[in-house]
Length: 322
Image (cartoon, rainbow, N blue to C red; front, side, top):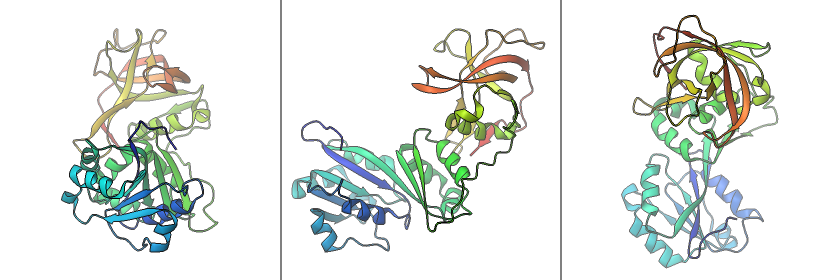
């Protein structure tokens, strides 16, 4: 349990599309000793799936249940009224995957409700379907999820690929996989480039995969040399003698393009094609990958030390995709 100011009500937010396992996870949580401590709980359910909250489970958990059928009914006034009626010590919200998460958060403003934990449930069997057809809604959930749980996994589930899809939009999220059987096997970490040797050469389209994987697995990349085509980002806010080589990535839609990259030191870099590194210039960078604490990251992460920088041509498609 967290520590809250007086009168604050902790909220456990459960996100995910229909039949993603939200209700089942909540029911299991209510029966756990660490959670079932007698505190008065209010469950706000914004959709009804296959699983149901039985009267016995609610009584055992000292919980009340309220359903919200329409998104426009989920308002600040509604939440205030629910708090007044039920006097909960904590709130569990089973959100509707088709509703806006931003609107939900705005509805809690002006109430004593404070989000304590956000969990996103994902049905591995339908993940690709939703990402292909409702990517913006899915990404909105993944961006704020602290824990992403893939259930109904099997030995053919591409866990490494799915993990990278999440980490592309939320590097801090914890990604877990639950199997439907005991034959899930080892996680597939197949990469489109070779990491066995001391040098890595990236194709243009593989920058995003490397960016996510390098942040996750320092033991694979520490001390290796990488060569890749990037665009230069320079800022007065960066330490002297550094820049960020990176790429613009579309993680959701055309309105959700972001620049991703890691800090790079250039003090000892060589070049035969350019005299100065300019902002927005395309370069071919060869650099050593180290892992250090960095103020820009707020934690330890990949830091590049340039060995060679050459001017390069802009790729046919400058964007990368996840």
